[in-house]
Figure (cartoon, rainbow, N blue to C red):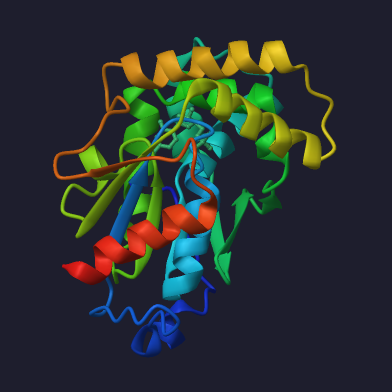
Amino acid sequence: MHFLVYESVCSFKDNIDKYHNRDRGVRLKKGLLITIDGPAGSGKSTISKLLAKKLSYLYLDTGALYRAVAYQVTKRGMSAAGEERIADLCGRAKIRLHCVDQAQRVFVDGEDVTEKIRTEPISLLASTLSAMPAVRAALLSIQREFVKDGGVIAEGRDMGTVVFPEAEFKFFLEADVGERVRRRYMELVMRGENVDYSSLKKDLLARDRQDRERVIAPLRVAEGAIVIDSTQLNTEAVVNAMLAVVAKR
Ligand code: DC
C-alpha cells in the first residue's frame, strides 16, 4: 500500500549539474546523500538547511513527518495509546513535502501545517508516536522516495542507522543539554510562543529519553558517522567543518 506521497517543487533538479560551493572551492560528484542525526536542539535543522543551500541540495526534515502524524492525531482527538487506530490513520493520511530553496513545507490532507507542527505538545507527541513500529513503517517509503536521485541533506534520528545506512556521508550532531534547551527556547520565543524554560527543559529531557531508549530505530551514532559537538560552535563553523569532510573524500 502506498499511502504517502511527496512532491518536490525544489529547484534542485535544475541545479544538480551546476552545484558547487565555489566560495570554498568544494566540488562534488553528483547527487550525494548526506545524513545528519542528533537530539533535539543540537542544531540539526539550521545546519542542514545551510549545508543544503551551500551545495544546492534538497533538504529533508524527517522530524516534520512524525510531527505531521502527531498533528493529525491531536486534531482528531485520538489517544496516543491506540496504536492500531494511529496506524490506520497513517494509512489514510496524505503527507506531502514541498521543498522550495531549502525551505520545506508540509501538507497533511491538503492543509499546510508547516508552522502548526512546531509547538512543544506536538514535539512530545511526535516523539511518543515515533516509537511505534507502524508509524515508522508508514513513513519509510516517503523518506526513501525523496532521496532517490541523491543530492539530499536528510536530517532526523535514524537517517544514518536505519533509513539511509548507505549514505555517502553521515554526521551526528551533539551539544550540551543546557545549550540545547537554550536554543530550543530561543527558537520558540522568536516564533512568538509563550514558553516556560523549566517545562521546556523537562520536555526536552523526556524526548531525549524516549528517542534514545525506544526499541525500534533509537537515536544513536551510525556506523561510520562523524560526531560533531556544536556546543561551542556557531552554524557557519559546523557547516564549514562538514564541507571540509565532504570535500576531502
Ligand atoms: O527533529 P524533530 O524534533 O522535529 O523530531 C520530532 C520527533 O520525531 C523526535 O523527537 C523523534 C521523532 N523522529 C524520529 O523518530 N525519527 C526521525 N528520523 C525524525 C524524528
